[in-house]
Image (cartoon, rainbow, N blue to C red):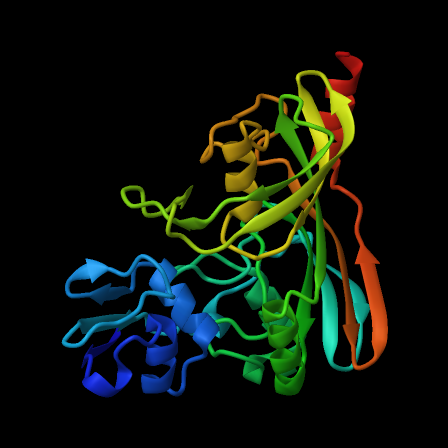
Length: 304
């Protein structure tokens, strides 16, 4: 475990916490710093920092705990089919399907759970040097129990380009979700989100959280539930799940935000489509819902 402590001086007063730490820890990306803040690895005056945009004040004592990097090559992959699929290969990026139940990258330094990153580095040796050392090739994530497609850069230049595209909100992301109840046919959920002040593994709607917005439209109404097409404008942790719950229509199967269901063993959320322009070319990729979501919808339809 590496640690870093800094006392705010007059020349940086008012800076955002994440920008300041990116300047001070030059070998770490701003995205990585933001993840450290969200994972409660950063304190200001002994209190967990609640958001990356926190403005620092003169004399603030900032303490950062940086988890040691796991030697991922030491983990053996399962002998069976992990369910990962390569949907498209470009010289500079991959489009990959991640099944539900597989984490994108190790959640902490001591984790021995095999991740998508482990599978990718085993299959594509060149990815080891792309992006941050602790999560090579990763520019965006899906929750462990969310299925769907991901962009995996294969070069550091591509990594920088896709990082910028995500920051500029230039990548179109479309999800399919089965939620409880019958919401209006379409809408915009515009609620700021941040780390839950008590239950730190959860995200909550907070008045001074980070700007977060999600568009949705109804695909079909089912028995006491609805299939939605969802397009997040921002990319906050658990955004769709928390926004749907705040709307009063949590994602079915989501034990964390209030809608467990006997017909599915995980939250019914699938990253269905990605579309973007890369070096002047338009790309669009889709991957159909996995069988557990199809079975859920089929059962809910027969109950109508």
